[in-house]
Image 1 (cartoon, one colour):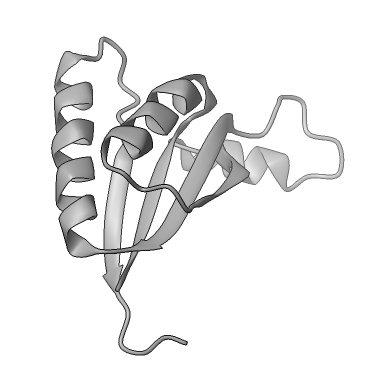
Image 2 (cartoon, rainbow, N blue to C red):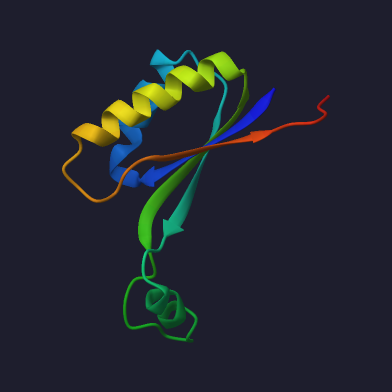
Length: 101
């Protein structure tokens, strides 16, 4: 069992859901997050009345799943990122789970 975490800008939600479907990862969770590339934006959002919107609307998906499904997902994400025209690739990481119930 491994923990898969995938992040991207919100615009790619439909693409990520399709990638999860093709990888046969059917059980997962999604959370809305703010993404930051510039540390100065983080500092601006810490003030009482920030002058600009905090971060970029982003999403985080996570799933406890098997290695074989993750291997296929990584291939699909790599293919997707190679074809994209923006500088906002889908990111994916895997964390080993030592114990689970």
